Length: 613
Image (tube, rainbow, N blue to C red; front, top):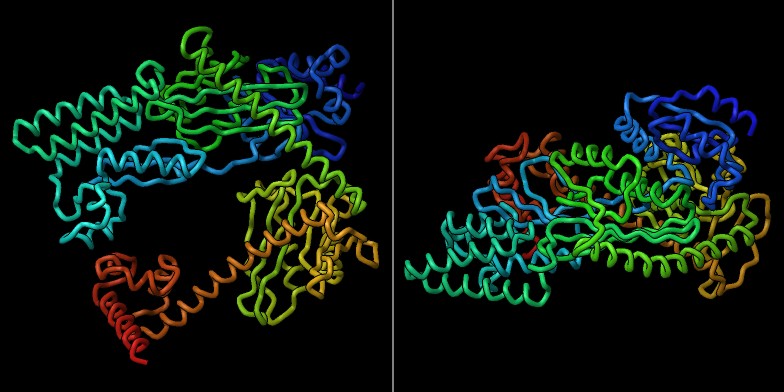
């Protein structure tokens, strides 16, 4: 630690970000500070008296310290987030699910705005409501809005196709039929206004609006409309009575629950939208450093650094250093003021307690799952004599049928679970004909060339779908990159006979690793292999379908190279093109009305020929 004390003496007393590194130069912890010198000193000077359980492990691995000076704490927060996202240090809070949650979307600029859902939030003038962690919660909310306000959810093309007669949703009383002129534009706008208010949680205002609409409809002797408004009001009042929406004080807010024991911690985020809790998200961490305030602050910075639909208020369990800076950063990211509150009493404090109870229950369940997965990975390390604990596994599978449209897949598992946002697909570029080894060589080269890029961090173990020859190919690539010892290699080959156990091969061993047929370790690796195979086959089928479509398009007189490229980028098969109208086709780049008519004519004749033949 003496060399670190030397570094400590040279640290400035300015705001910035510090990066703790191990002997191989890998970032193991990244933090921000108002005063770099004082913050790092708190780790090094107080290491013996520090009660934080993970600190001794952190300091034992600490070999080098880098830092960046910033103008203020706000800039330090932004830089810290960027560096954590890039390096993924093992002692930081790292959110595994970086997927975008689904949100409901309404674009008020449309003449008859539709209710859809999306996983991408854009600054496009539309209004977004969410997030929804589970698709089931999203569907239930969306269906409720359709039932109450009769908004459309069809595509613009389908909307145009039903100008004379509305679709089934109209007859099921889930849409007011604006496509066929069954509702006036101003009344539809009123419904959109009501739906927007409802999704924002302004239930009282919605009932007030519906009451006004009901009275107006009654005065104009539109009794059927008045009855519909009456039914909406009764439904909302009943829901409010059951769920206590008026007394809970819930609007658009996130409620953060936190529970910790030693180096393990769990968070639960309760999402309140539309006047009540619509969903929750759970997180578990098993290498937590810092005190509770630091852990909560770090989690919030990571959680809201992802693109998520934003609440009007966030309730948090404890105050942490830099809360004002975090609030400012969050408001800047979201483009509007977002309150961050630490409630001490009243209804909001009760909500925090509910969130904490959820976090505690989640902790017990996820700790058990984590320990079970950790035990499996340790057994796997022992069984295969691995150099590393296989916390991060990448599995590769090559898929080709007689060398035709050859592709490969890469799936990633972290701590025993698939991380689908890190799955990759490869189209073979340099190999022609049937040559699995050459294809695997190409794919591994392309993958490892990107090891310093974000999202392409090196795995602990590479698993290959294949036998000894495939393993030797992977060994050759790993050797060329100087990664022997850094990455373990294993291949898994299916038994030649139906009843024969799959075989596991490791480097330096002539025969397969002896393993019981019912071994949990073998079943786990088979599951990883099967997932890679599924992912490769799915991609292979897609490319074959596009290839078939491409060949079919070559036969159409009005379709040249440019138009063919446009059609292939918009449609995945002939059925989709057949369903497209002439107006839709002619609106595509490089396409004319005449070309669209020729395409429709050819496809119609082709379809008639198939029926006759």
